[in-house]
Length: 239
Image (cartoon, rainbow, N blue to C red; front, side, top):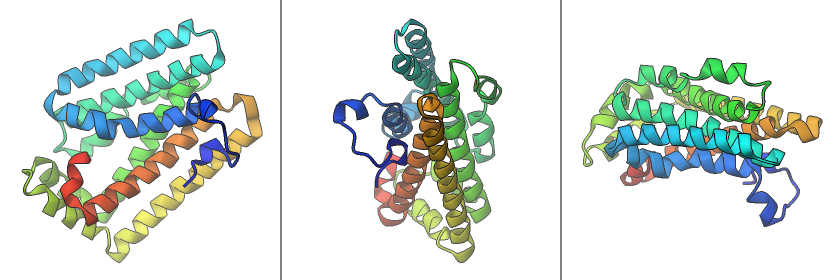
């Protein structure tokens, strides 16, 4: 499926590889394969890496000669906020799902306040990630899956697949399916609205393009995770 942040026109590979939407999607996926295993074993160093990411993003933004480079630096700064929040929660509080969203939102005031500054791409990435997390957590809470969260994250390797299958099966009830479909529809609507802003404001659309890509990628990842938990829970170590 084509990322709507990239439009309908086929772009040269060199353009795609340097585009903000491309890197925003990469940064959304990166925690699945890099942060998840890292934070299980070394949460403190994972948190420190978030500081390194923030420092690198600031330096790139301040020293860049071109707008694209400045935006990429800002994007890295926004990613560092999500990375540090994830490291804090999954490193020390994974059995307390009620704290997930508050921890993820630790930089919310800074993100809202920076939307009209040179750091707008950082704020767009962080806020879009937070919105995606909020939709996911709320859907889990309403469907009742969140009640199984503490058991899943504290289970042994042998127990986890069965618990994940049970959680995924619970989403297949009519009420839960309705919640999931509604949440997915709302995120899709947000993606469409952000994409329309990109089309309308042209050159000043970098933040909206980032938000579009983050929300779309989050929706895809949630769908993949659900499928893995239901069909192949033995692969749940990737989550």
